[in-house]
Image (spheres, rainbow, N blue to C red):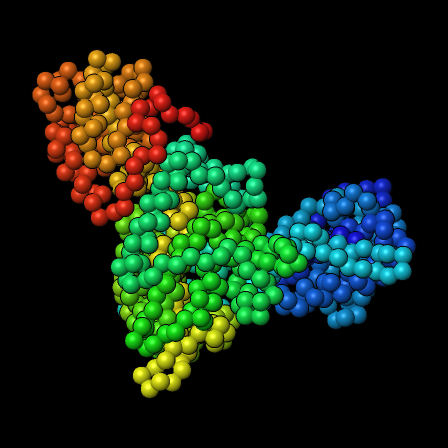
Length: 634
C-alpha cells in the first residue's frame, strides 16, 4: 500500500468519465468536497492482495497517527494509482478502500471516499506547514504486516517544535506606532501594500513556489551563483563575483558584532544526535535536520551555531562582571532539510551561511535591554547592505504573558521603525523563546523571507547547564539572546537582486551598493591606441577596477557595463588624454535610457568612491583586470 497524506484547507473532486474498471456509484458520489481535512491518496498494491484487511487496518492506524498530529477528524480517501507501478486487481482495490472507509467511520472519523476507476478533476489547497505533506509505504510479509516509511521519510528527523508549530494557535494582530492593537480585518492597509502581502503570507503559510522568481535569472546573468546539479537541492555554487559579495557581507557583519563586544568562535558542523542535551534541544528547534551515520553514531549536521556555543558556555567560568557576554560564529555552513517545493534560487537553501551571535544576560531586564540594542543594530546592518526600512516588514512574536508585562517595550519597538508591524501572539509558549522579531523581505512573488532576527531564550541555559556567579557568589542561570544581524548571507543577496528587479520595473536603474559591486570602476579605452592611458588611469583609481580591452565599439562596451550594474564607467580617448580628465557615467545618477555623463579628474572620482567604500570591508577583484583574460562562467 502506498499513501500520500496532505493536510488541506479543502479538497473537492468531480467525476468526468468512467473507465472499464469503474465501480458503480450513486449520484451523490459523483462529486464531493471536504474542508479542514486530511486528504489521503491511496494506491492498493499487488502485495496487499494476500491480506487486504490487514493492510487496511495498518493503513488506518497510520492515518490516525497523522490526524492526531494535525488535529483533524476529517478524512477524504482518494484512489490514486499513480503512486505505484505494481497495482492490485481493481476488485481488491475497491474492497480495500471500502474497508479503510469502514474502519475510519467505526473510529468516529468523518469520512468521504472518492470513487475508484473514474476520471476525475480535483482541486486541493495544502496548508503548507511542516507536517502537511507526508507519504507512507505499507508492506505485507509472509507472517506479519510491517509498516515502513519511504526512504525519504526514514531519513528525515521531525522535531517536536515542528509538530508544535503545526498545532500552535496563533492570534494575529497589527500593532501601530500609536500603540493600537488591531485584528488584520480591522486594519486599513491603504498605503501598506507589502504589509498586507506579508500578513496574507504568514496567516496562510503558503511557502511553496510555483514559478521562478526574478532573482534567479539575475544571479545567473551577473555570474554570481547557480544551482549545483551534482549536489542535493538547495546547495548552490558561487562564482568568483558571488563569492566576493558573500565574503564582503560576511566580514561586514562580523565587524559590526565585534563593535558590540562579540567574541568570534568556531564550532563543529556535526553533532551526536543521541547526546542527551542536544537531543532535547533538537526537539525544541523548528527545523528539519540532515542526519548521517559514522562510527556507529547517528549524527546531524548543525542548523545553527547554538549547540557549539552553548556547549562552550557550559564549560566556561563566567562572572556577573562578564555579562552581557556575547559570542558569534559565521556558520559556513548551516544545514536545514527544507521541503523541496520551497527551494528556489537564493531565497531558501538547505546549506547556507548564517552569522549567529548569542548573548548571555544576567536577568530579563538586561535581556530586554540587549534585545532593543540588537534590534537597532539589525536595522543599521541591513541598511548598510542596501536593504532599508522601507524594503522590509517587521514581525514581532511573543507569548501573551510577556506582552502583558512588557507592552510599553513592544510598542517602543514599533515606534522605532515608525510603521505598523505584524504581531503573532501565543497563549502558551511552544518554543524556547518568549519574544522574537524578524525583518522580512517581500519579493516579486509576494513571498516573505526572514532576514535579521533576535530571540529571548528562556530554556537553554537550564538545558545546557550554563551558569554564572553573581555578586554574592551564588550560581545563577542567564537568559540567552539569539541574534542573526543580517540573516543568511545568501538571502541578503537574494533580497538585493529582487529589490533591483523591482526598482527596474519602477524606472530606477538597478545596482548594488558600491562597496558590494564586484567591479566598482570600469575603464573603457576608445581605441587600441588609448590602452596605455587606460592602464595608467586604472592604476591610479581606488576600488576594484577593470579594463574593457575587447575589440568592440565604445557603445557596446558601455551597454555591457550597464548590464553588469557597474557604478562608475570611465571612458578615455584623445579628448581625455589631452585634457587630463575622464568622462564618467555615474550609474546612481542615471535614468534607464539617459546615462549621467560627468567630466572629472581621477582625483575627483577617487574622492567619490572613497566616500562610498571607506567604512566597509574591501577585497581585491577576484578576476583578471582585462576582460579578454577572463573566463565565462555562464
